[in-house]
Length: 153
Image (cartoon, rainbow, N blue to C red; front, side, top):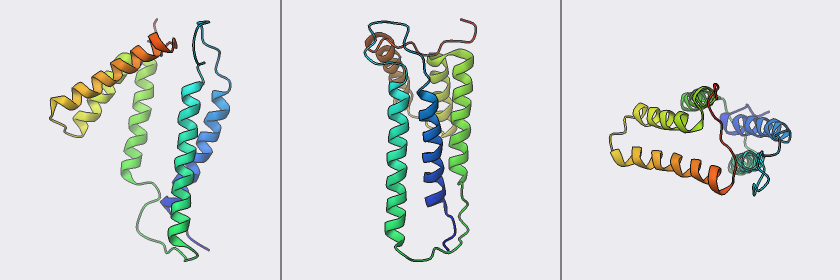
């Protein structure tokens, strides 16, 4: 029997969590605006489906590259430290969105991420802030979907 490795455990976990997400997303309320081109579940559904697709591709690649060979136990952890830091960053971002809303949380989170990576080029910060502003405008004005606001509004 092959030992579990991060190349098959993590994609399987992501597929499982995405399935739960899709089930939860199906309960999203309809948008508050009648002229919205998509409802509130559209983009989360797309993200979940892309995650499932990429995870399936990772599993397929791992199975195909290993063939019928037995995988040996290695010193690689099931969850690498970079993945743990990524999960902590996402949890921090979600908490921040709940407290201060999408716009400010995104500015702070992207800036914190770039500072943590010791990025010194101003163009990276400008690109991140521009991306946040464009997404905020797209959702609010084009798709007419309200992004999360602060807890006190």
